Image (tube, rainbow, N blue to C red; front, side):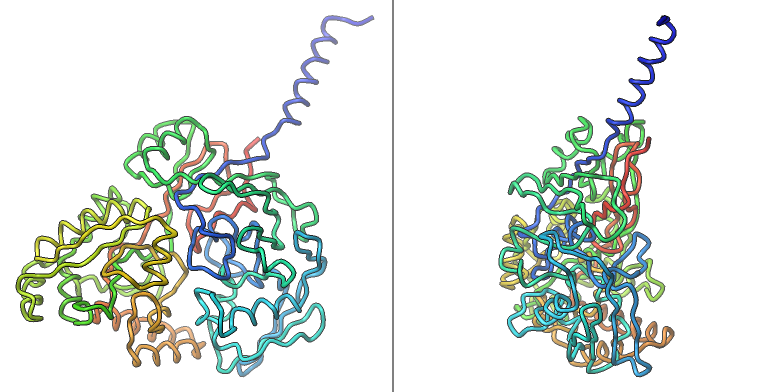
Length: 492
């Protein structure tokens, strides 16, 4: 005989199992910048890594959320006593998303491609010490360096060194094929990218089965999408003035952390009059950092006086070298033969820190006679005209790569700073492994570029993210530009 009670229990049990079966395993993550293409090994755009790093692509080593470097596709390695030979043992059972096996030949292909004469890799200089890449057997690869490099394991964790295959390289910019726990599904340009769980992943499967990256550049639209719960999280939320509203709403959580992003007023050091140290110094003294942080970032950000993250143990506070002093700025301009100032351009890419900060900086520069014409550009335009074309006077950008002071040793880098003494210093740094000696060299490097006023050093970008309250596992800090979904899940 069937009782009412048994019917009730049966219905309750069915509802329970139905709820368990319907547990959420997908996510929609919003971000402000859309990648220009999907090959992290041939572009400077951090937005590529924001979507693909550790999700679709993996390197020999990788960054964790706390900034540590751990094994990736290499399960272990041995370094020779002289620091010139790195022998990597690769993991078993690793396949690319097209089903082909990842082996030592793919590692060699990747690194040889980075070092090739026609390489488009934005961080090629990081790997310049690699003299040869030798395949010992399918699971062993040996790197021989021309000189010791204490940063090599760190450098190999960058998105610029993720492992790619020759079979898929022709279409990688539109159809990325990696070894990560998620495979690329589709890209609706101007809107979103979709990825899904890769069934044959070599490691632990993520809790998420599908993810959509939604691109929302306008801060007002970002606020609306989050409040309407059209997206589950917004990484790098572009409207810090709205954060108190999210903090007061139990539907959401606000994650406030640090980034590797030195936000700078990048200066074309080869373009007159910025080829004059006095003019660059005048520029630096015309800038009120705190006014920019308060006005553009609503107080989120740490003032910096050089290109180095304040949370790094080797950081030294050099903000006094470029303290806000409009009178000194005017005097320096007069000494440089520009008592009436000059005109220049200020290219501003889409991020809020650039567009909002640019308005404030243009007004500050005008007070000392520097008339900066604001030119708003989209991200692809910025990469083409400013970064690659070097056709600019000033621009604002946040350099989110980890500990990237070494770019100042590359005279062909977009701000075109050419200092042989600094270049020699970085060579010495790269060949130094003793921690105390490295710290001294890093302090010296920070000081040189601060005294040379290579760029206007503004602030360290804060990592500001908003997410639904039930979401867990998102990185609070950003040791590299990535939205690592491998540890993200929904609370039960």
